[in-house]
Length: 447
Image 1 (tube, rainbow, N blue to C red):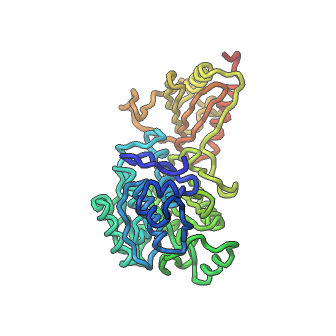
Image 2: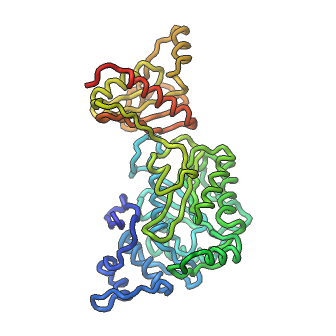
């Protein structure tokens, strides 16, 4: 699907994947048609004209998200919609695939609270987030009162004032003012920080381009420049995240250059942050941006979310999925064999034959030879325990044990898919995958 399609509840708006079809937009939106069409011929679109840029943003927000027209000052950024929506959409995927239910899908009943750092005059991120998810709420901060005044107008115009709260911040205040917000936890933090560290840095960046920018930039200095640029700003967020840790499920940031992404990931690794995700936010063939998210919690995003888009190997986080190929293996045989192997281990395990799907939780490595030997000589009997799942289970009275590893296993013809759900130790995940692969490979006849 090339562009988002409007829907009544906006719950499944897809990523922008291709360039905007301006003729189609003109056919759907009279305001856009009025400035781009003469009769049946589409005129050349002058993206150096700020009014055309503003109308494009307004028309996309109206068509794809049913959002009211924006009011923006002439001296502040007019936000292009596609990449910004892709950033919000990726955060939705991050949260949808890291819930305690292990559902890997959007849960309409889940309440979510996010923070946009540097909300800008448009309040584009809170508007997109809350208009597409009815149970989501947003807080937003900015150090510029002029921008906040317009942001409040845009929130009010879209009747979202009860779900979007904006506040003025200062340069020396915490970037993530969680205590000032009066909350104990946030589900996510997002930011689209200034990319440049100085005017000279910004001019050098423009000078290095082989072609002039396709669209005029109307941003003010405080929107374009900050000490250290995007790397400096996000590094400050990393420092604050090391103190807040699990009070925020996902810290995220957009970055302007691949080199910036590489530097931020290097900093995360320096602090032993192993649960992180990356995405390329390109929408079509022009501007490309990147985003990174990191968490101190142990829920792992789905593999297509944790490594989203076209990315170089150097920035990739550990994969959260493995595939075991066993030629000639039927789905039924695979399910029976997997169930048999895991029932013999001391872990929480629930298997659903009708879905050929199971979820295991283990407090430690219970499949190694040493673990089996220890159980044997201790006189304890090996065996799995029933597990409470999102849609019901048998063992609600049992005391919860710490979970070192959780894995979803899905069996299909000639393949077994393993999805890392929870845990901080990638080696433990790969060890479990290796054990299961060996067990399946050493089996007898395959149906």
